[in-house]
Each structure stands twice: as C-alpha cells, then as structure tokens.
Image (cartoon, rainbow, N blue to C red; front, side, top):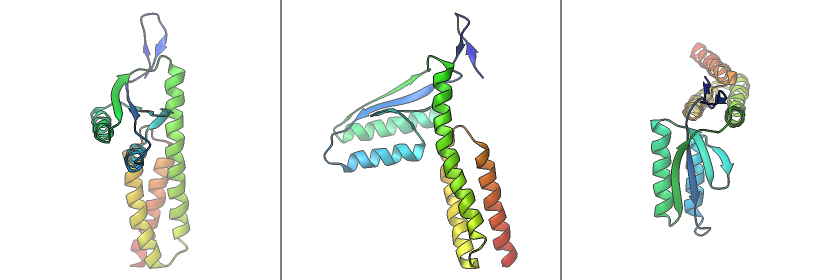
Length: 166
C-alpha cells in the first residue's frame, strides 16, 4: 500500500535496508563469501557494492552480520535504512527481485515435471532436493510471484507420485 506524503504525492510503501560495502580484491575468498551470502538473501544489486532488501528485523540483522564480516576482512561497510523517493523506483526494484525469484520457481516446476519420467529412486532424490530448494527460495522471496504456488503444487504432485509408488 502506498502512502501519500505532505506534498500529496505517492510515496514508497515500505522501508528498505541497504548495505554499502567495499572489500579488498585480494584475497578473493572474503569477497566470494560475502557475495554468496548476499545472493542467498536475494538482494537487489543497486550498484557495485550497494545492495538492498525490504527492511525487517531479519534483513537488518543479516546485513549487520555481513557488514561485520566485511569489516573483519579489512573492508568497509555501512548499513542504512531508507525509502525510495518515488513509487516507480520501488516498483522497479521489486519487479527485478520478483522476476529473479520467478525464474527460480519456474526451474523447480520444470524439474518436478521432468522427474515424473524418472525411476522411483530418482524421483525420491529429486523430491528431497526440490523441497529443500523450495525452502531456500522462500527465504528470499520478498515479493511472491504466482510461480511460487505453481512450484509448490508441482512438488506436491511429485510427492503424491512417489507416495503412490511406495
């Protein structure tokens, strides 16, 4: 839901948490570690070294931990909260994040459907892996797309197929 500011213009609907960071090029291990953690969180990359997530207690805490990791690796990091100036900025940011997650859900759907043709053992392995992957995606799904429910349905259908064969 958008808010109206004092000038009568629509404002962004919620606060974002931002992490601005810089790490030395060498050694590369800390940079890779930080990037993997940010990717697992589902961040929106605004610029090199500037990422954002919708602000809540969990995302703020995660960014604070990562900021400390950056500092421990002899880098610099600052965590900020703020509102985009315009609704369009926030909408674009959310759309980019949503499309990334939707693509991951589409991959789950494709894999679950392909597993229908596999052996029972392969189906069971696929089911375990796809359930785990659904959980990981849900952790960074800040703007749930319709593909999320379709992916859950595809995994449930695979589970029913596995259970029927047992």
